[in-house]
Length: 292
Image (cartoon, rainbow, N blue to C red; front, side, top):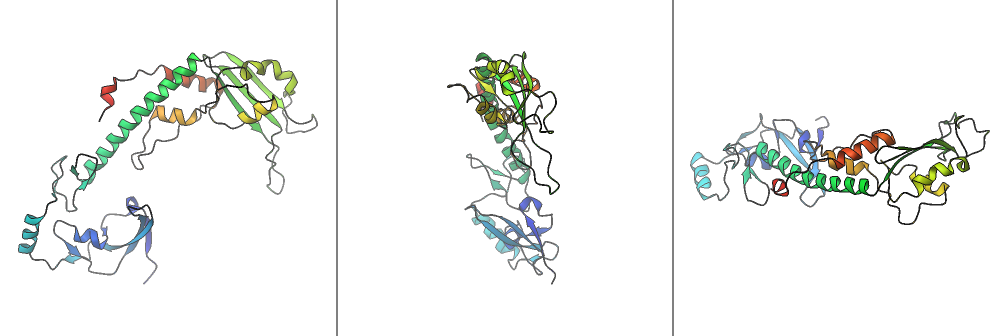
């Protein structure tokens, strides 16, 4: 027999393939009528990896139980076979989801999971809005620091040490503060742009950034290097990273994984500050409307 296909997770399993237990749990139970046709690798309820054999529904056979035995078993059963959401009577048993003890068909279970996830994201969005308003009230500075590196060597290896910092900084209300490339190496290094200036030449302009009570960046790339270049950030300066907070504000839930998608980098300090202002201007619904 050729090697069997191994599916990663239940979502990857195509229709028509069932485990032996799933066949037995059908409304009218069946048993495998042929060899395994595939495997599925997933996690069990303990979170440990486990593999299950999959059999073809088309090859399966009715279980030995008679119609009378199945009817008697149904009368003794305590679990229902009807979806509490839509009234469906699927072949496979409805599943219990949530704290209400309801039984759902798989479609209603997905809808309920999405609704529950959206309630969570609504709460996270409210926190993101409150944070953005705090940053505006604190007169935060938005900074973007890009590391400029030497070109890769012919071997493909690249020196990770930057030769310059590209600093783009604006006040959170939009005023331009810094737009400069700061040289970190000597003037003979060709990888440094011609317009680059020395740290001393940019020090006065950098003061507005270094002395700000809060410095917001999209990610922490280069921010630490900038602080070290000028002797460290001022004591008490907040330096929040905005990318994950913006993702919470957007609340774009992937329906397949129920995870919030990453927010796309605005690309400049000005656009990041614009996004911050949009976040702060978001009107929040009344608290009761976010409750389950």
